[in-house]
Image (tube, rainbow, N blue to C red; front, top):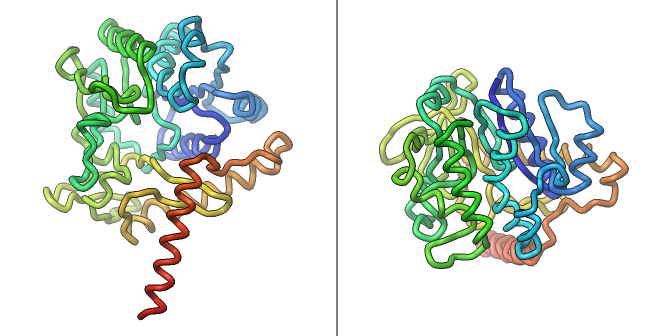
Length: 321
């Protein structure tokens, strides 16, 4: 049994559903533990007959330490604060042998067994951001990305998790401060501080908008591969991290990263269609009839303004030509 866990609220529900469906398509014999961070998400999964899912409410999960600091964090900061705690909870509650934490905006394209077999030798597996030079934020945001974390329920695995949880309870904010950033910069020291930590060298595990410009794409027997433009090494695409993909009522904006037409067609086009289909389905459910899945935050408004500027510029550019 391959165990996965994730956490999200209703705003990220379409992403969470697509994550689940991508696992269902690519992974045999898996179970996904979902930590529902609001009642809408909890009610949705409680009333749906999804196979291989266990939904966990905040009332089941939150302990005194988490509740104590909850009001001092924004929703995003609280999500980050809770990541390590979710794995600790699962190991104690269900006595899982091991588990992989995945961000809800990941989507699996494949599940090569030779990649996951390596995990057996280690207590913890982490992935690098592998930033393209143009977008390198390693010094501020961290060398490693919390997007995908494998832990064994053993002495070393739990030691790392408990250390991470304590640090996040003490400080986990969406800002850069004294070598810290959210829950992520803490990972920088893990390979040196703890034994049996493996840093994945498979660049198909962790393709993201911040490194897309370093790769070309090709298909082989219906499997999507990436090829590094500099090393010429080829990797089967395992999962993509749809970071910074903003949804605004039937429209999407891909954020501040350069995306090629090929990358859009191979990575984003189908995902966006699937995303809209999930929203359409959700809107037919009474509890979501009036729910706004769009990003209406201050950041969202900024994205809309920038998008309008880009569209205006492109139209005028075409007009000039």
